[in-house]
Image (cartoon, rainbow, N blue to C red; front, side, top):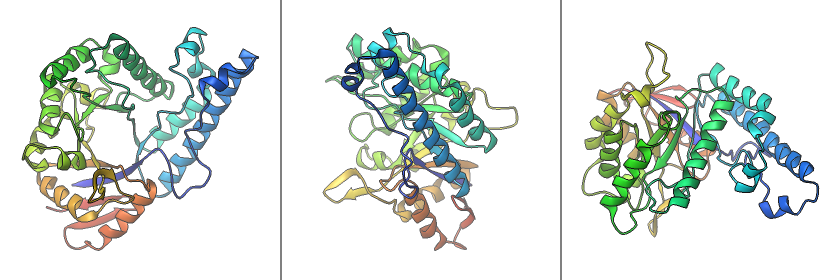
Length: 335
């Protein structure tokens, strides 16, 4: 089984490369020249895209092919006031968006977004649902501006239970069904660490025909006695669905994806540590290797790319023990 490791948004080893610089609406509205204020937003977004390119080049230089974009690429893009102005940042920034997309495609990278916790499709509040859909539209618009097809996914949680988890789950299903296909075919569902556990998330993913991203840390702190390996055959099948494989060229297959992190401390089991401890992750990978051709692993560790480098060093200790180092961020697990 081939395993590729990736990281989230920022680098802790590449200096001055933040892709998340922003401007508050208070600052924007305080600028008297509205046109100049909009140009300032576009300048910040252009800098974020420039730094994203630096991060992508840095990643490829270290054999990292799995990367999550920050959702903060375009400041205030989903703010109602800017929408009402008719601002189209995707058109204004068409060239840098296209450059990012071309780099991703040319280097066979797997990229994604993880819209934040305000994007909640299980909500009973219409205004929250409208804002959540607007946020998903924003993420889709960026991926389309990059020229990336639906293999570039937006990963979300089911959301809150609002005192009645079965009703919340059903509301989530109904709201997803009502989404346009161009949003649905980019969705993946992830189990969370407090509310919708892995079996519940998997059941919803199966009912919607959406792929599930298993977070093995979340599963460890929020489960009903199951092991992640026990769920894996069903999770693997969600990646064969039409939505999962939409836009995948004939003869190819979009590999399943998981999230991995380690507890911050014994007193904060849900928090994320700087690094990912190799042994528990390797144990899971060995369990699923006989039935899995490839899996991509997003490390959600505080040290970002630094955690990838550290994990690869740790995995080198297992060379010859069912682990083969392929390159700087890829291994083969031999069952």
